[in-house]
Image (cartoon, rainbow, N blue to C red; front, side, top):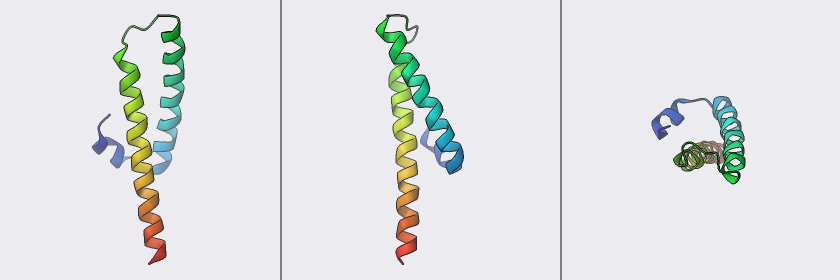
Length: 70
């Protein structure tokens, strides 16, 4: 998932997607512990997608807070 795709999504969508990614990350971590991963790079991609979503959400909250203070 690219940052442009994430920026186009609504906050509710991002929250839902974040939950899905965290669940998938948990499942991959569990499968990785018993050595049944088909694509080990997928764990890294999911971790980075989670970070992208959290960053975008934080930017939006900061912008909204800055707008409220003015």
